[in-house]
Structure formats: structure tokens, C-alpha cells
Amino acid sequence: LYTYFLPKENIETHKYYIVIDTLRATSSIATALSVGCDSITIVNNPEKAFELKGEHTLLLGERNAMKISGFDYSNSPSEILKNAAHFKNKKIILCTTNGSKSLLLANSKGITIAASLINLKAVLQYLLTRKIDDIGIICSGTDGNVSLEDVFTAGRLLSVLSKQDITYFNDESYIALNMANIPHARILQYSIHAQKLKKMGLDKDLTMCFNESLFNVVPISKMNKNEFKSKI
Ligand code: MLT
Image 1 (cartoon, rainbow, N blue to C red):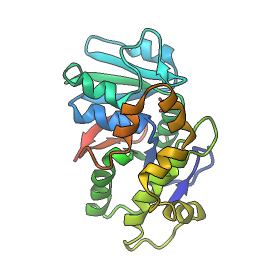
Image 2 (tube, helix red, strand yellow):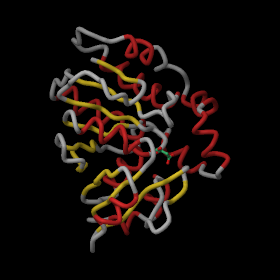
Image 3 (tube, rainbow, N blue to C red):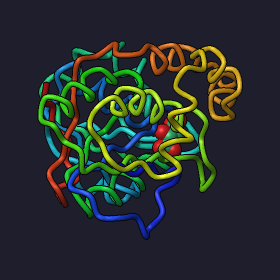
């Protein structure tokens, strides 16, 4: 089992990739699927999102943590929850700064699961019941820098996975594992991205994104499809 603190190009080949962007892309994906959207397609630029816009689609995304002009919503779990009725049966096109990059990278290499604290237990259950062990965990980070909250989420996954019969952990997996028992409030306090979102008044997103296992949903995309659907 390999953990990557950043989505670098030269990662090993794995059957499954778990992509983490705790603040906020993979939390938004889990929330949107939980309120009944049909699917979430990942794109890495707004132009591509506008091209895919159709009758039953919603465009979601951010640049610098703010809604992209012309989009329907930002990349905000609390906004999705507040407008839940509008998401029912919709096809979502999601464009975010860091999350999109790591999700697209992972999906070009294998089956991809979007994981966050918000759906931690569901992802673990999915992996454990299927005895999936060829896994690469990719933390999205922020603009090429490692993110505390992503490594923490990896650690929370690894603290359960490490009890299974997994023979190999790379060094990053051990480092992440050692963070698993730090209180959530501490991570929130020290994460640079959390501080930025707090300053922007996005406290509701922070509360949701750190509400561990709030949603029982496993967003999963077949290799190369870049489309996440819900599995439980
Ligand atoms: C990203 O993908 O860069 C993040 O999800 C940024 C954000 O907080 O919206």
C-alpha cells in the first residue's frame, strides 16, 4: 500500500486509487452523491465544463476557493447540502484547482475512489469487504504543497487498513499513520487551507468536512471514465 502526499506523475501502478482532497473537492463529491445527484464528471478547466453543460447538468467549481463565474455553484459541501433538492438526478461537472488534478491523474491509471473524512467509514467498508489491497492513496495537496488535512485523512484510513493483512507500506504511509490520532480540532487549527477558508467565512464547510463519516457513500469511477457514481 502506497501513500503519496502529492499527485506526482511518476506514481506506481495500482488497481485502485483513493484520492483525498479533504478541503473540499472530495467532500463535495461525497455530499453531492449523498443528496442524490446522478454522477460527477471531473474536468480541469472551466472551458471544458461549459462544453459539457447540458439540460440536466450543474456546473460546480472554484478558483481561489470562490465560485467560477458562470458556474451554478462553488465547490462547497454546505452549499450543496443547502440546495440538496436542486441536485437530485443532476449530472454534475466539477472543476477545482487541486482536486481535479489528482482525480484525473489517478483515474488515468486505475479505478478511483474519492475519499474524505466525510465518507471515511463507507470507503473503509468498501475496501475491507472486497479485500482490496492493491491501493495507492493520493493526497491532493494545495498548489504543489503538502496539505495537513489530506495526510491526516490518509492516516485515518491507514489506521484501519494497517490492521489488515497488508504486507507493504511505503514511508509516506507510515508518516500518515502516525498522524491518525491527532484530534480533528488540532488539524483544523493548523491547516493553512482551513485557515484560509475560515477567513473567507466558510466555517460551515469546515464543520462539514471534518464531520467524520457523516455520509455513507463511496464515489467511484472506472479507469479513464472521470465520472463518479455512488456505491455503498
Ligand atoms: C481544490 O481542489 O483546490 C480545493 O478543493 C479548493 C477548495 O477549497 O475549494
